[in-house]
Amino acid sequence: MSFLVFLCFALIISLSSGADTISANQSLTGDETIISKGGKFELGFFKAGNSSNYYIGMWYKQVSSNPPIVWVANRETPISDRFSSTLKVKDGNLVLLNESNAIVWSTNIIPNPTSLPASVALLDDGNLVLKYGSSSSSPVWQSFENPTHAFLPGVVDVSMPPIPQTVMSFIDDSEDVPLRFSIGSGDSQCASY
Figure 1 (cartoon, rainbow, N blue to C red):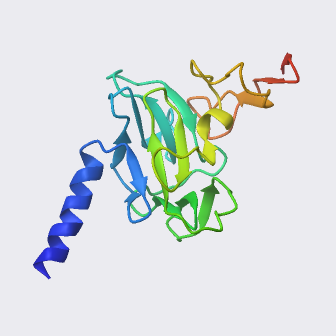
Figure 2: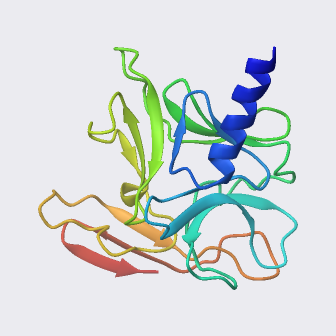
């Protein structure tokens, strides 16, 4: 019994002290975050503006006062209680479960049929990656291919075929609704709306 208590305590300490990975047996809730190895980016729950709702997002760790949010998972499905909600790896996907244990956001990847363990890592370039198997494997999902409202340096790799991408301004300080400004790219074109 004491070993089980120690194991649970060690898991909580590892997440709150800045681990950069969420494995299949781990989750984030409340004030817990993961931090990229070099300490550049942090992922966790946050409030936007005057909103009473919470989001899962990524921000610059080294900016102490009002760090800019650079990526948001559940921008259209906020949650009301971060302590009763959980971000975890489930069935080969990164998912956000709300207070009712319903999935409100997911990477929506068809799980790998080989049943390799899935994990999520926050990299120092600001890319959140979902991988199956070893840490050297290629990501099956990454935030760089799923931008929300900001392009970070390195998002567009000219050696790769163009991936249509659109970013849309997040929310204003008074309402929980996405604003109506966006910019997108695809097929060597760029358009703003």
